[in-house]
Amino acid sequence: MKLFSWNVNGIRAVAKKGFLDWLNHEQPDILCLQETKAREEQVPEELLKKHGYHTFWHSAERAGYSGVATYTKTEPLYVQKGLGIERFDAEGRVLITEHENFLLYNIYFPNGQRDQERLDYKLDFYNDLLEILDEQIASGINVVVGGDWNTAHTEIDLANPKANSKTSGFLPEERDWIDKYIEHGYLDTFRLFHPEPERYSWWTYRYGARERNVGWRIDYFFVNEGFTDQIIDADIHAEVLGSDHCPIALELE
Image 1 (cartoon, one colour):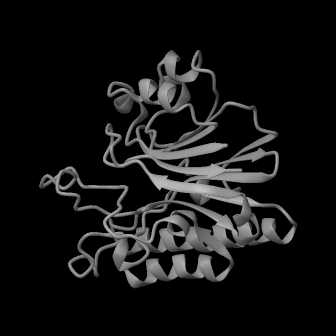
Image 2: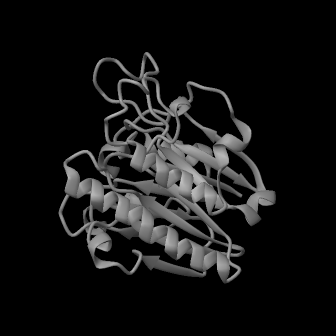
Image 3: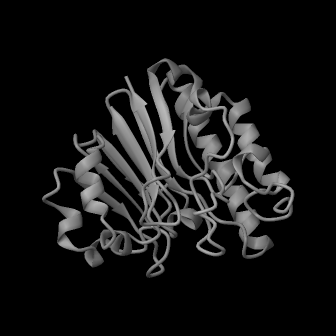
């Protein structure tokens, strides 16, 4: 089973840049999209049907903002929009789908750059999500958490760590939360296979950053430790254009 996650920075925009051709070529079993920036009724018909996938959408109350979508070849056993926490669910950040032996969380984590209030909102999101995930693991359920985590974990995960030490996305308090997830037994699947530097999933549109590979790795698939033996491979597909992020992949046995 192959899973992909991709922050498309607007589903209608990426649709004009070869998205359906890419989908037809890769044929993932499950695709998690973040920052769709559209309600389902605003999405062109070709993105909803006739591509061989069941599609599920969770959009923000605010128009043109946030939003996630999950495409699945096999219909999930269960679908849930949001975490059940109104202050987060109003922004359309989470879709949960149940599959044969795991729960998949497709998440667009908050960005904390605007001000202290938004940073606190982001850190609260990390905290409340971890509590929910821990409850699932305690009940014997495996989880896969994929999406745009909006934090580079360590210095190897961005091109200019020193210059960004006071930038949201690489603040110590944000990185500490990634540490906490790892302490609770969740694994960064990409690093199971790729210890090498200079592998990124997001680049600013400015300064020719992508061409120079001046980027950040902020998109991840995490799994609980007990699910590790199901992981075959994980990778980043930096060659795929269409957004300021690129797709990441996770292959399960």
